[in-house]
Length: 160
Ligand code: SME
Image (cartoon, rainbow, N blue to C red; front, side):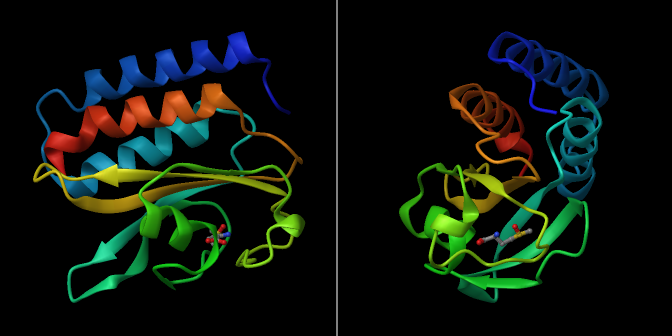
């Protein structure tokens, strides 16, 4: 089920408030990322797969999965490959209304129909990860999702 725009904005606001509450005294990056994933997967009904692909410090042109919730996510994605790699290479949000129309889409689960990926920056201001969400419905993601996710990622930036 895809919530209407006003409801999406409310659900992101609720998620931000919950996140601020639970992370008030927590700075461990793994705990922070896990909490983001859990809160969003719980609150947003159109989120089928949700999680981080982190820039691998050992291989800075490669993303490695985790934390995430959902069905199996492929482990590594080179910069420039798939929707996640495009977002990482360009450092810009990407919304794909129909993954079948995106030639280089990497299908981890054939039920995923649409996708949004936003860049995630660390406390040093450098790209730390991308945040990926898949939905089983076509055209599930809108400007409200982009804005909501970017706000959440900006909130946790100092802790990453
Ligand atoms: N579809 C992504 C790969 C990751 S999965 O959606 C979990 C992509 O094309 O980058």
